[in-house]
Amino acid sequence: MAVDVFAADEQSDAPVELERWSTLARAVLEARGVRGGAEVSLLFVDEEAIAALNERFVDRRGPTDVLAFPVEDDPVSAGRFPDMGGSGPGADPEDRPPLLLGDVVVCPVVAERNARDRSIPYDDEIALLIVHGILHLLGMDHQLDAEAEEMEALERELLAKFHAGSA
Image 1 (cartoon, one colour):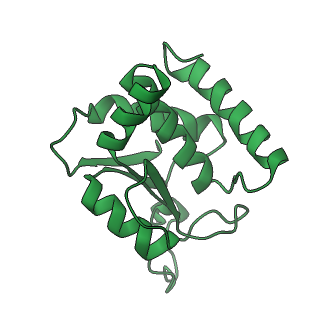
Image 2: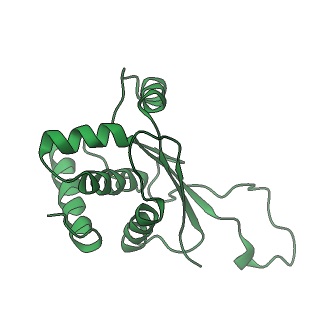
Image 3: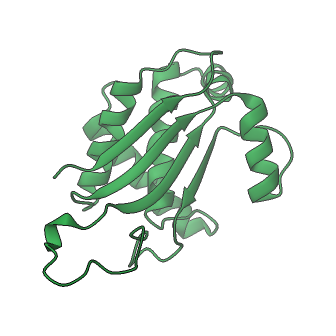
């Protein structure tokens, strides 16, 4: 059973290749040890939508490039199974509902600006934001310098492996 990445483009301001970015997200999840039966949502939204999420959940005003919403903050249990009411006697363990890891929300318009400011291709910026968001879902953070260095090194490694053009 493959890792499921559900992608949706809920904006029309910048081009998004849903299949390409779903494939990248799935490859990163699998490289980090996530196996079948897990689900992640990858959403591309406009500035208004990401600004509303940023203010509501991060307490910061204005749009941002990427937000990650893990289902649980505990990277050991990484997510939850829906309907934890039990499967009943004689149930097949293979029929378990999927493990929900969380959502990665990307704003392509902010990504375009970031790419222009950093003089890199737009696709490289989108790829970085997806990898960054997934690593957050898997429990990584960058609050401390050591954490930031570890996360950035892993981002570079994963991008080099799964996204042509990234250095």
